[in-house]
Length: 261
Image (tube, rainbow, N blue to C red; front, side):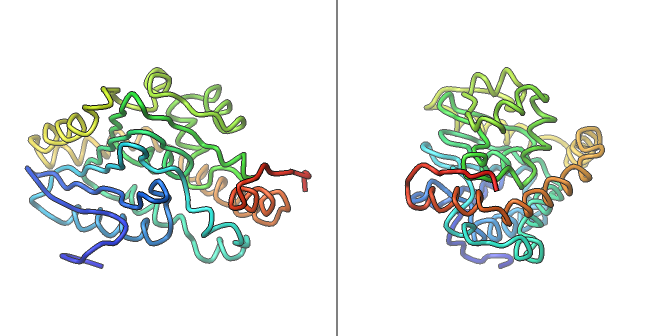
């Protein structure tokens, strides 16, 4: 889209050296479809180029940061389609943003929403926030970095619990596990997120970039190999009957009957 273009699934504003991106698909709890992810990457790259912006904020709504990927868009996908579409390349571009990204999370932050938050640098959570990777309930698994980044953030024990059972972590659990940076009141999460971003924006842009790169250098050692492994495993699941049943059951609002093939 480029500079000055109008977005349909997000909102973009600037104030006090901070670029603010708000997810805006309220009817589907900010479900992440291709259009939203494309616009999000475009906005992030626009803000990354803007010399007047020193920090980026990513927000959802009070009810939901993002409840996951758009299942209606993915339910009939085939492994080869996913491979050649390279849907998750957009997530790689978010990682390449040089400026700090602060996420403000309230309500549901599930599946792709949780994976999106984990690409950000600091996470401010409302006490109402719920974090999870419920893909297992659909006959699939996290595919946008969830198995890798969640394990690095919270450790194997909690990651296995969340990913294999599909349960969610409360804001307090997420803080204790190391998934989020701060937990604040349900009334104050947005203000706190912007306050943190303004504090960061007051620092040296050169120092910010090098500090972020240095932390990520440690955090992401050997990460890309794991991301590649996860991505291929995710694609392979779309050759299974369980994936077809799981996603159709979700769309049809019924319990899935998994056959193990």
